[in-house]
Length: 312
Image 1 (spheres, rainbow, N blue to C red):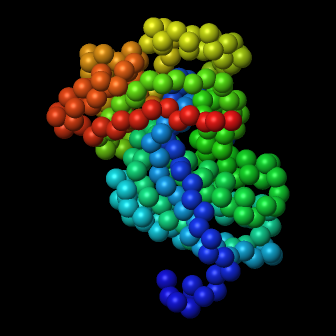
Image 2: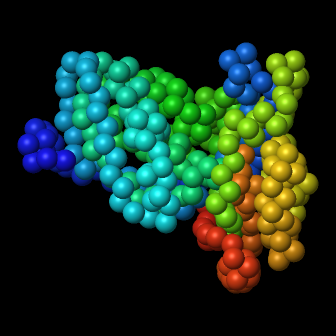
Image 3: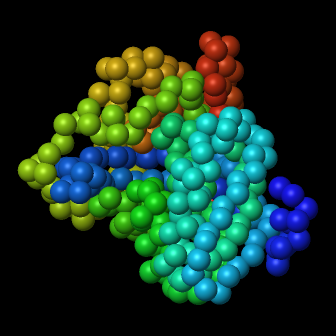
């Protein structure tokens, strides 16, 4: 960026936000919609694993016009992701442009992103980044309301509305319905992601869902989960991920990681999203650390984390 370009910026206050990952504790794909998306029912939960997003500089134009987004690679374990995705296709760009157009303003935003969350892994890193950018920009612009914010989120991606609320939440529809759940858990979580990138569109297609598939009442599903979530001994039988069968068939090494989690003492293990990350949950720190060491010695890429605690 040239010095001449820098001089035109009106604001240089830095805004910093942690952009958290998520896992799906339960995920059902109910049917294919007429718009070719799918209706879902899921219980999502944020993790302490996060990317760090900063708004370094920005300028605002009071009239609608061009919206320019720059994203600086600030490192991190998954920094190579930013080199592979053009700025125009980054969900940060898509979300902010949608929001600014909806509120009738223009602007130039320079973000920096420290990328720690693996991409294409079922952890929602790109969606979380988009939601974090929307939080910052909507606070700065202070125009419009929650409708514009959530409309931009929903238009950007199915997981983005969840990250505007975070915590533990039931997610329904295409992702637009987010119902926060009052729940906390101190379990130790081990994530394994060995770099297998699973195309989301391919994963959905493999389920072969149609518009004729019957959707049962999700309120009953919520009730059942609220009852069982306090009984960890029942999680293995009560919670599921509809993508596991097809993904494990195509990528048996992903299913093998889940088996190893249980063999090494996890009380619950599952693939998150459409893959390929597998998580295992442990009741004590020593057990989690021992499993992490064993899996790392076998050549796996392992992350240790916990559920994010939100103080309301």
